[in-house]
Image (cartoon, rainbow, N blue to C red; front, side, top):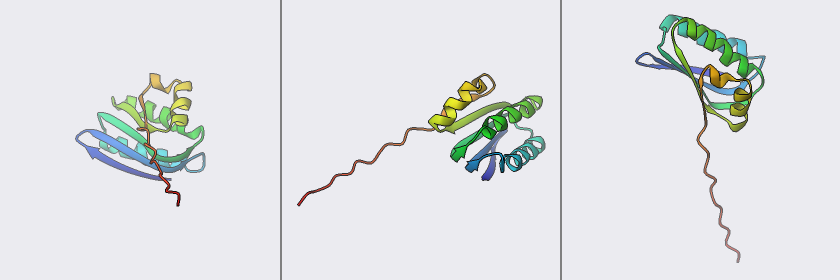
Length: 116
């Protein structure tokens, strides 16, 4: 799992990519937390656009980051969730803690075959 963090003004964005599971979630949490404490953002974004698999560790990641960021008076947004991840986060009531948004729908390419 890769986590790249950028800033723009007082906004911190953590771009997550790869598989988010119980094996690698602790390292992701530590990296985001250390950066947030040092930077003290006004708004934080967790971008799940590159996440290819997520187990319940994804819910825990969002819940824990919400708690830390709230202590820093920072708001949280979770964006680019897959349809499945969005549904799981809504069922866990995370939409009460953070703004959730789905990834834009991918337009399917139309394939045309010419028969000869």
